[in-house]
Image 1 (tube, rainbow over the protein chains, first blue to last red):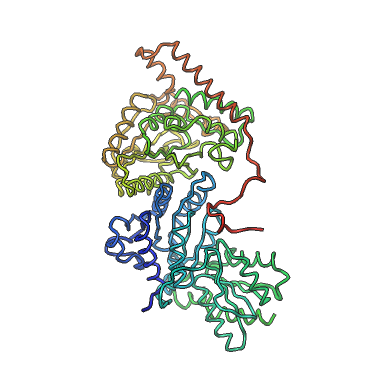
Image 2: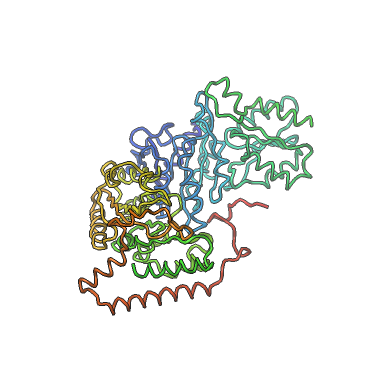
Length: 322
Length: 315
């Protein structure tokens, strides 16, 4: 038996609906016999009548409704059809959900699922990675699972957390990643994972870029270079300690993210490691992100726009020569 | 209405005396509509007031001391100095805490009502306030539509006070009458002159009753004139003389006082007693809040998450 990243997300939601009557799923096309644009809720509306609900194309109101329900004790899961469209719901997520506990003392336990990141041919409005925007604002947890196991356990954890969680699931991983079985338990929220141990250079990454980093590490291993790959798992909270410990071992840091290059999660990692671990670094830390243009449609352009294993390997080789 | 007017006039004088930091936003001229919004809600109902709804908040049960504590920055207030003036709320008591982005609270009210439906609570109603300014946002449109899709037991009371800050109606919308939108959203719509307390009680009370009974969501559009600036920093010099002569430009408090005297419901002495009592209540709430300590930055935990153990740490 094998289970994909997408199936893990579906299974996590099925378990949540089964185990917790406060949970309901709210989003465009999630209900009926359709089961979502990517089928992440396939069959759930039938199995859990009245709890997997289609909505109008109203991202602001979808999240607003979830917030109101959460304040009244429910545990809503919102599916954005694409992460890109969550821009319409930014106000509710950042200004309403993100400020509510601080202002009133009443937490807002919503989970907003964002099908994120690029796939071939998806273009500027169906490919974005929004984690850095959400991480910038106070009051939110931002999860970026990179494995099938984490996709499952972190979604269950997201719903258990009393605060709003933005859960960034990567569309490229939906069908590409498989695991033998689903775990009972994952690492605690906020703890990064050493995805591959190495001694020469630390690559810090999250979401689909972890898989690209692992492929790059495999390639460099054939050249006798041992890369350590850290999977952040959550970009907020950011596990600075695990990254610092890794850089203490390797002396070199490369941060890889799929989002746009100005600021963001990779810049945050470099800022923290430079200020807290400057003495550990043997070379200036580097970062690799997508290009500073909208995400292109054509595969030739798209594959050059986002970082991939070859880009990471090239950057890592250069950093190792420093 | 009288208590709200007394309270807000006192807040204005404190503001002018430099004793309130930030803004003061009052509901002068809108008290009749607002009080009707709070009066018909019962325990378990949801109320989403906006900035000119002190009368409704008081009618819903918000204690005066919450108002003065929030405006005067007492750390004992519901927002503990973290948010000010009219953003306060008591989500646990079903009084939602508005954000400044207008229209956003409509869908939040719908969600709160859906939660009650999920939990099997019956005969519950939600009432959300909006102005004609807020009616022009995308969030309002999305919220109204989703309310009707969910058949939420919701009443939306829209007070058209003629200006969005300084912008008059003719630059806000171009439809014939705002209440015509009700049918487009799948709401039932009603219009009132918001200076007529009797009409406000009858129509808003009726809308609450219909929503509670399972009728479609209800929209009530009330016409008034804002008898103040947008906030107390604003002299409202843009209000035209012509609009001040309109039937909705009357002072609803004066109209109400005259009406109840004319109808022999109260005599002038009783009214004077009420006024005295309102002043005493307001002065006590202000004196109490003024004696209380302000929040201290070194005692603030500076954590925006309730799950403190997983909050990010910044050095």
